[in-house]
Image 1 (cartoon, rainbow, N blue to C red):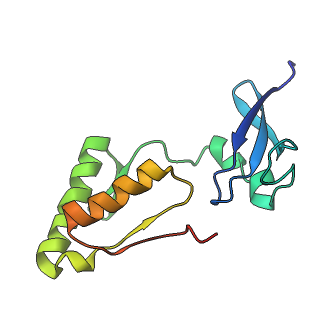
Image 2: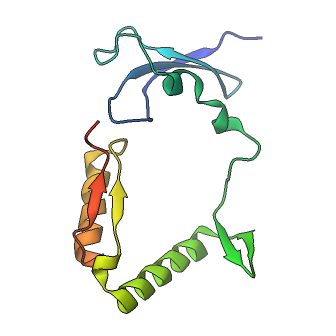
Length: 136
């Protein structure tokens, strides 16, 4: 058994930005600990940052989009899933107006992703109903 590779990263659970050291062995996360050199958390982590990583390798994890057809979830392509989402959003917008649609952004995303999110809501959907968890 080889020594695990240690990869420095930033935790993705909230917007705090804690530094983590992820230990990877044979392309599998085997341990996570706080990065003592990270100025935000100085090696400390919450329980999620330390222990909530097994889902990455869970057999039940979704690896492709699903759409409900005839009452059952069936695997589909990303193209079909995006088409389905666009049709549903357009239907809601036409029937109830753009103010019936809202979007929730996340502090875990980059500023650029959050910018595109609000731009999409305001220009494509026509709604200012956007919020986020940036109040961590």
